[in-house]
Amino acid sequence: MKFCYFHFMPWTGIAEAGQDWPVRNSQFDPSQATGLYRTYLDHMAYAEECGFDWVGCNEHHFSPYGLMSNPNLIGSALIQRTSTIKIAMLGCLVPLLNPIRVAEEYAMLDVMSGGRLIAGFMRGIPHEYVAYNVPPSESFERMQEASELIRKAWTQPEPFGWEGKHYRFRAVSIWPRPLQQPHPPILMSGSALESARFAAANRAKLGIVRLTDLESVRADIAEYKATARAAGWEPEASDILLGQYVAIAETAAEAKRNLSQGIDYFLNVLNGGIRTAANLVLQDTRYYTARQNVETTAKRVAVLKGMSIEERIEKGLVLCGTPDQVVDQIRRLHRDTGAGVINVTMKVGNIPDEAVHRGMTLFKDHVVNELRDL
Amino acid sequence: MAFTRHALELPQGSVAYHRGGDGPPLLYFHSAGGVRIGAAVETLAMSRTIYMPVVPGFDGTDRLIGVDSYPDLARLAGAFADKLIEGECDVAGHSFGGRLAIWFAAFHPRKVRLLVLECPSGFRPAGAGPLSTDPKIVARQMFAHPERIPPNEKSPEEAARNRAVANHYHKGVDMDRDLVARLGEIATVTLILHGTKDGMIPIESANFLKARIPRSHLVFVYDAAHAIEVDQPERFAALVGDFLERGQAFLVNPGAAGATA
Image 1 (cartoon, chains in turn cyan, purple):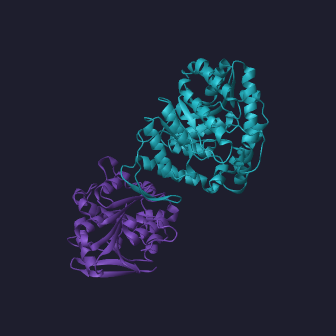
Image 2: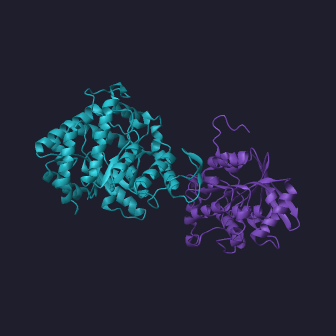
Image 3: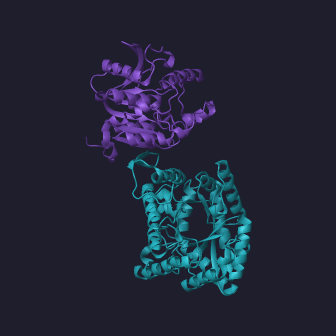
């Protein structure tokens, strides 16, 4: 079993839930954020010492949900503070960006880190398309074309041009090229069946980070494996990453209290404005090609909002408790899904950073070594 | 843009050809499937006069005595161009015709202004394996979008006859070493096209050419198989049209205002 220490880098300085889009940035205090970035980076670098295999960065825009508008900047900082942990970009929102820029920056990270990059090709969540003024209906098409273009930029031995639907380049020859050959491992989101199929067809790792229930997770994984087999390859457990909110404390009560508070803040405050934009996207565009995915998204939010911590633990949607309890929960999760990588988010909402750090230390001392044999 | 069929008498014999369009001359060599005049060619014909000789033996024509190889065809095409086209012209070719276009450029360098090679054959690496003869597999290798095949596409029988003629000229040679030896001589600015879903010509062939033709540019046409003109006629016409219009300056994005020259 492998573990990825994942961080949203949330802004926790606001108390009121707002529904306006975009979220007004007058509430942001840059001088306070300097310290926040330092704390968050310290925790992400500490993940290596705690036995995490990957450290994960992500990209979000225009809200306190996350302060990593360019995850590659954070990845670059982490490379300087770490030596062995994989730098998992989970990752650049490929349909929103210049694919050649993504190819270049990922190649830089791979070379600078000595080949430690895991390259996430992500679509993002719907509000990002409003932020960057990209038609949400083009999301999947752009994802398909950009993914192929990035791979070409990494692997082509000769300069080349690209005449596509969404992208056109007349001459490409990136410097540097990636260190890992033929290219760094790629991870794609698979929280919907069509995405899981796309990941498998691209021989990418599968990342499922938005969980409603384990039944749909198992369906996504089954679809991923079936598509992979049809394409002539067999995924391993380490190709499947499953997202979990995690709280570990000396007592179960403390862990539950922290996680409950953090999830409330995450859902009610940090998600406020972006939910407004996301609803507009899902109502008015074909962001998801299948209508079913729109309904699934709405259902997930409704279900999660009404669920107690105990229910979340029981359903395998969070890992929460003492180290021993969390070890048992991870064993059960692995048994129930076959996933070989857990994406661990400990800074959920406004959980105090001291509690996060303590949870990481407990993970190091009492959890990770119990699970290496999985 | 209407194309008309003609015949040209040359010392080697009579050569059929199609002509259409208006503008500077473009000499176009067809693929092993024979002449195909689709939307892509018709768009190019809006700004070019296109001369499309029918390689002897294709499309129901007779083979010519003494014309049995690519060098023979290139010499024949030289006589064709000298008689019909005054001065230099642009030259393009698809697959079989791409290989012929390179031979033409090697034999008649002063005749060629710009060269367009659409997934040319003749540079198949040793490890690529043989081409399939299963019609269903061949169809997938040829077309990413079979629904875009124009209604006037040749019948399976005509296509099979054309392939047999192409094999006569190929003579089973996957790697045309005589031509490889001359690639470095091609001084013309050259555009090489390759479909991202091409199942006939491996990507290694495109890179092989790109590495050896000194002033060449390789461009991948996204979501196109071997028949780029059929799968992506708009992309093909826009790219090739821009290249023929601006030459090497096609590398520069002219913006909405367009190029100044």
